Image (cartoon, rainbow, N blue to C red; front, side):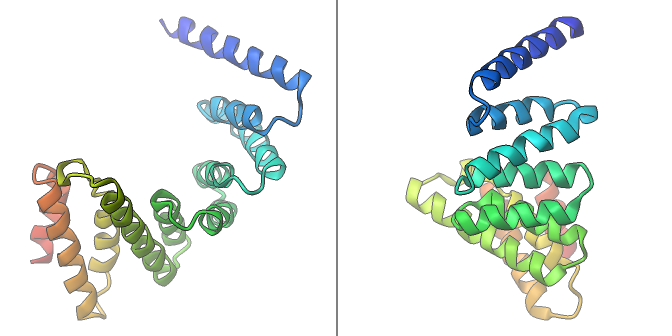
Length: 190
């Protein structure tokens, strides 16, 4: 079974490389190759090279910078990942995941204040998306509210941080009452 999956990926890679041989400056193909290669941890440098090439060819496409950022962080280069994620946020300031993953990367760098700011932007952007799409509560993600609440709960200096964390967790609990992590964190803040 694994050999079949591997040979399928090998065939897909061969097709992408053949297409790139005909059109080496095709950013979407480079991005697709980078995504495929990123599935193997030992091919991360190759994947990053392809994704960076796509971002260089199409610098106004936030997805390219987001993918470079995510893979850089996964590969352990958090500073480079943060830089790429910042570019993605600058290009598309309405993208919740770009803000959220930037917040996580900033946490890894120990930049709590900047992390909190990015996570707040993620929550705000997410709410705007829900309002625009009229997303019902049961279909709303709690990921960024939960992440921001974790960061705020760790801030023992500000009472306002604890109150904000509680509001976020109550909102998340209302949208996802069966999610145990939300319930546990809420219980811990009360």
